[in-house]
Length: 309
Length: 309
Image (cartoon, rainbow over all chains, first blue to last red; front, side, top):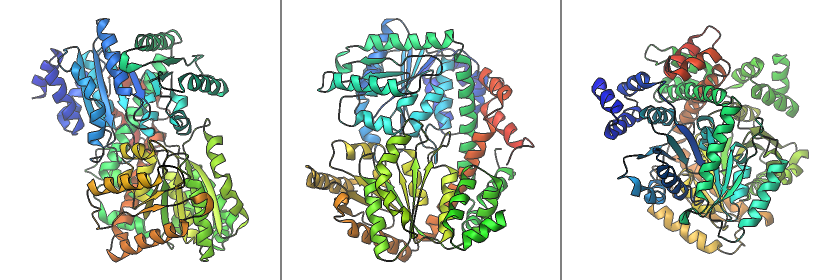
């Protein structure tokens, strides 16, 4: 079955791609096998879009797709949702606009739950990203919801991380406090037509001046958009291209991609840990009572013959 | 050295406690050893305080300390900061108020970085929590900053999770979208004197009515406070006690603590994964090029003779 799927995948069948992501997401061994056989195939430009809910990330993504398509480039979007039955609807609602691209063969959009008992971006998300790259998209946008660990993780898998803010009260403060500001390669002030836009830009400039400089010498640009009307979006795509060019010029793409490999391995081990401790009641009881340390229990689980490790 | 430290620790020397936490935090083997010898000692009531920055969590914690001290109970506060040099100052600023308790022998306050390349609440935090419990505090408050993975993790280690919101625009929406709403055992609307307080309470009530009922039959209470003036704080502590009583009555404390043990084991494995993949350049290169899958690399690292696993 994998062989046939692989053939269809390599022939550019989008349903094969969707199926492959589902296999990977469900942890099916055929998914891992397929993934392995496809690894090392060409790389897309991977862009992380992050920012608080309501900042208009999806609208911006929608417009960036439009812009890239105009340049004849293909685009995949991976939308990472917090895995909550409670929020599913709200999040999807934000993304309805993007759906208009579903008919376009050069665009692929996929939502994934971040799951991960402990982590942010789960291993499955990174695996899905590898599939999208192998499929041959020119761009992969990864969009996350919320301000937290997933947003920090995104910076480790994306070549360029775009932080989207709005003049809405507290938006920047929130990003600042959550430590997201420092992972941004680009800052976009969206909904710039709302009151407070220019002031936010000034505040951000002042903040960036206080921040330690980017180790690579990159100057984080602050761009302004009204994504709902497409204003300023072409400039954002240009700035993303400029950042990529900077990485290549400074020889930074390679270390960045090694860090991504590191992230992938860590995600795998984390996921194994999650699964191994899922049952294991007697062992949990021993840890709870203090009879065994968590370290001893961890070792026992990893060395179990059923362990994937 | 560990023996002497343990003796001082057991004698109630707070500097020994501080030293023990530092050992655990730095990953020193003496820390793990001490921790193991202390495990299974009495348990505090563990309360997670979560909510967006600016919601007044620290002020509420400060007042809850006051309230608990009035009842003759001892309190430890573990403040978990996102590990960012950029944000350190801002976060500490919020906590200055609590410092007034530093002179009180019955109060212990400690900040910790959440670190964790992948996760939210790091293993070191859970280890520190165990030390605080072993030391004999009646209460341990864990306070997190931001709305994200750490907040979901907190619910796994705390007996009771308190979500702190304010009438400020978007606060509830943010919590809702980030999936934090559903981990709350108690919701506190702080800064209730600001405009929009009663309306937020109505909205929260409506939201909770739509939510799936708590599996244990617990009704999530919505409380209102003006923590800066101490208003409503006694009622919050009462509600926390009521939640604890509910857990005991329904026999839910035990499964909850098994889940915490599970979390501890998972955190250990995650931390090992983080450390093992830290160097390992040649292996990373093989993963990057597709020569090895992340799974193969993970297995290799875990089975390495130097591995803690």
